[in-house]
Length: 264
Image (tube, rainbow, N blue to C red):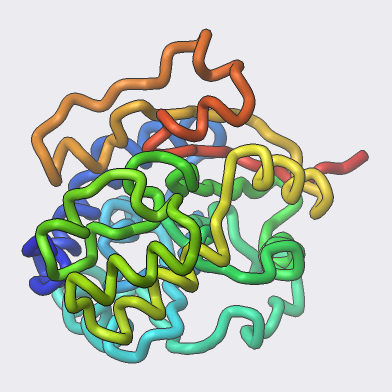
């Protein structure tokens, strides 16, 4: 287990830096970010991704189901912005805005979709929060990539450093985790992620079913967040691998999509 998994302030700062360096510029190619912009992050954690948007004067809202994360987000943001709202709730129970003005110009969904068991209703609900010309930014690890099972959260060095173990059959994977004395809560979380696994092909089928169109896609061989985590230079997947369905999942550490509401 890495320090960022126990010291959440470290993780908050890492997300803040990555968001400022990569997300702001990327999103600015598709929408203008101004003090009038309304930004929503679903599954915001402590809210690190939202800091650069708040610093631009945008009105930011973060939603997370974990009360401890929202508590920390409010504490961290107390000295950053007066225009930040954080809500602890199940997003599927969060009310849809009554008018277009209260909907969002930008919605962030970062490392969340791979944790959602029933994805189609979730994405359909998310769509209702977007303004007609709003954009949805989704980032997630392709399931088959070396650490697509989030096994890096394990306490044992063996499990946390072994690539591809999440692709083992369920009984073998669970046996390995138990043998390494992982806590029951960690095992349950990892098995849940395995059940919710998200490949590129699955995600693309879902977004079209839910009425989204793809404005842009980036498949990263070296995730931009790895610049903060491991001091690695971000690198996109070569296009010849990019085009190889199913195979590309094994090499894509992060998938980025800019989505619009399809008006067909």
